[in-house]
Amino acid sequence: MPPIVKNQPIATWNAGDSVQGFAFLKRKELRQDKSGKDYLDLELADSSGSITGRAWSDSSALASAFAARGFVKFRGQVQSYRDQLQIKVDQCRPVEPGDVQDGFDESRLVPSTKFDLDDLMRRLEGTLEREVKRPEMRRLATETMAAYGPALRVHPAAKAIHHAFRGGLLEHVVSMIELAVKFADHYPELDRDLLVLGVLFHDLGKLQELGAMPDNEYTPVGRLVGHIVLGRDLVRERAAAIPGFPADLRLQLEHLVLSHQGRKEFSSPVEPMTPEAFALHALDDIDSKLAVLRGLKETGKGFVWARSLERFVWLGEAEAVVEAALEGNGDEIPAGAAEGPVDQKRIW
Image 1 (tube, one colour):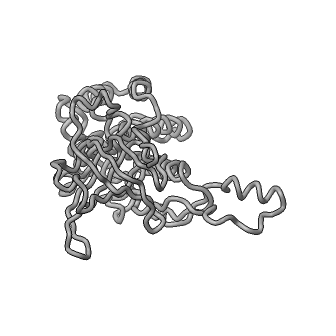
Image 2 (cartoon, rainbow, N blue to C red; image 1 turned 30 degrees about the vertical axis):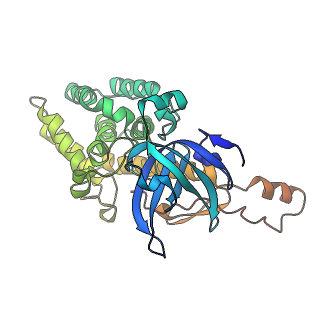
């Protein structure tokens, strides 16, 4: 029997490995096979990726008490099925306090931003302090950060596709707000205060639309209302807390939030009608799309179909293809060289 691969990232597993470790259980469904026997359809995840699991009728995991959307300890064998890896789960149970001694570390199981969260917060707070000039807008920024900064610091920006990890919303906002300053420097007709505050508020409704990591599922209010309207409500809430806040500034901030996705078919209740709204949509659009491409490039090469972008994208040649071309043998592309991950959802 091969040695057990213990506490290694899912992305490093190979067919034939016997594995043991900890994971976040994203899905658990009881099903029946062709003979009518019960089995569990599972999805295990860590910070490196996820894998489908099966606990068949001969597995002790079938009778174990563990629930989806929680951390588990497992043991099983990695198998290849239809050219995809999956794990045959032999044992599975909820994580217990003593598992820390055996290597349980929640931070290794939750996808997170590669940036330092403290540094991102300093950059965001510093930009707001430097760039926002009107006293009432400065107060709006300060009080909004006091109320929502701790949640913004760690929240994902999406359930999937772009910035869908711990700290993803903060990374997205910091990237956009620093670009917004450059936009305002280049286009003097832009109202800097409005554009910068628009960036801060544009996705703030996602704090209510999505659960925090690792359980970044849509909440009931997220599905029934959505982050755009929730974000507009947050503008109204924070502005109402400031006596005498100018009605015209509040209205323009509401428009920025409501129009930031650019088109009605992308769920914007209205489309951009002001210079700041056009700029905000452009900033959000490019930052989201480049994040999608970064994510695809981490695991793919060549041409990859990105459904959220509705096109093939070019991620660069695989090393083997480049070497073959340099040697004069570039007519034949090695099998799989142009393959990569397939992005299955709209960016919004």
